[in-house]
Every structure is written in structure tokens, then in C-alpha cells.
Image 1: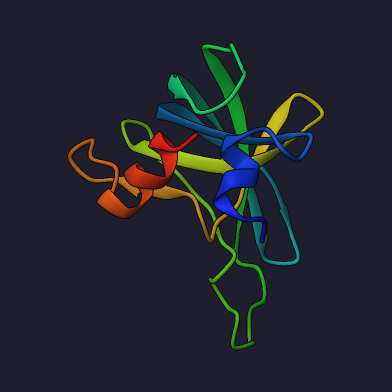
Image 2: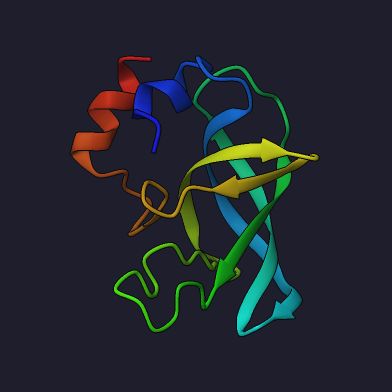
Length: 120
């Protein structure tokens, strides 16, 4: 997992940090119990140098079943949810880092993250 500053400061190519609301989500594949979904995110704020107003997030659930890591690396989002996303851009889509990305409650970024985001 890359440090937060690498996502925010565009220090590593294709790492992005952004905030937005899920407007649609659909399953795009199921393979060996792993479900992959595509969620359209309406971007409200970029942290770094990006301009898109919406993009597609790709996330999976059901990974690492029957291990101590079951569910740890899962990512899924539903329409109406607001998210703070840290991820990697590939092929025009963003793959969220499930250990850093968080669903926002009442539109508030947790204080410890807000402080780090303001530094960049």
C-alpha cells in the first residue's frame, strides 16, 4: 500500500485521490465466487491534478475466501453513497485501494485524513 501522499500529490503515475457520489453500480462478472462490479462515481473533488467529472470504479467482493484475509480486500459501493477514493487508474477506470478508500458518513472526511489532504 502506497503512502497517502503518493496518491494525493500525484507522485506515482496513475495513483489518484478523489471524492464523489456513486450514481450507478452493476455486476460485470462472476468468476470462482468473486464478483466484480463497475460503479459510476460523480466526482465532487480531486486531490491532485485531474479533471474528469465522472469515472468508473472497478471493485470485487468474495476474494480470499476461506483465509484470514476474507473480505479484507473487498470493495463494493451502492448508488447514493459518498466515497473518498484512493486508487490506481488503469485502462480509463479506477481500481480503489480497499484499505484506504472509505465511505463518508454525513459527507464528512475523518479529521486525520482531512489534515493529510490539506497538506497536499
